[in-house]
Image 1: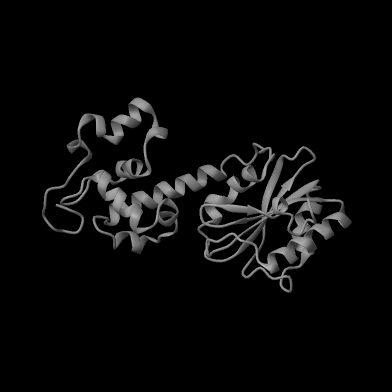
Image 2: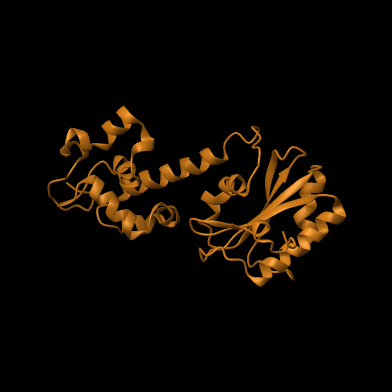
Length: 238
């Protein structure tokens, strides 16, 4: 009996050949060798008429345009998908939430930030799925180790709305030596707008006055990010 209440033969992972079963491959070779649809198939466990669990997982990934789309999808959207009832939707959302919590775990272990990629990786998973612009600040010590991440603002990023002093408030309080500013573009396109560049320029100038170095301003989109420092936007010519 399928989750939709219709009666038909379910296609299970065990119906696959031994060499094609994701669970066995994970056990023998490690999770890193599995494709996204195979990892998702382990959560789904069963398929539907005409599709085994791996094929159903692939269909789901195509519908939501990959893992990022699954991350953004709400519970009702998952349940409305073919072969995905309450149990499977709950398993998918639980797995995604575990991934988010793992990324945020052990904040006492300070990350050493040595590149824009390392900074973006701390926030890209969560911020790429936000439906509003959020501006967050990474506070760093003199060795570029992360002290903590603070959220300063959410809404449309606009110099007339953002008080630059708020960007530095926690940095001053925590005696941070440097900051990295990060915000997202819900559209998925991380290309900087003129407003983004103006905000960056104002933040960089304020940092000079406060003796707090602004190392970068990152914009996170869907699947990629842009470093304004690397492009010389708001930071002057490289």
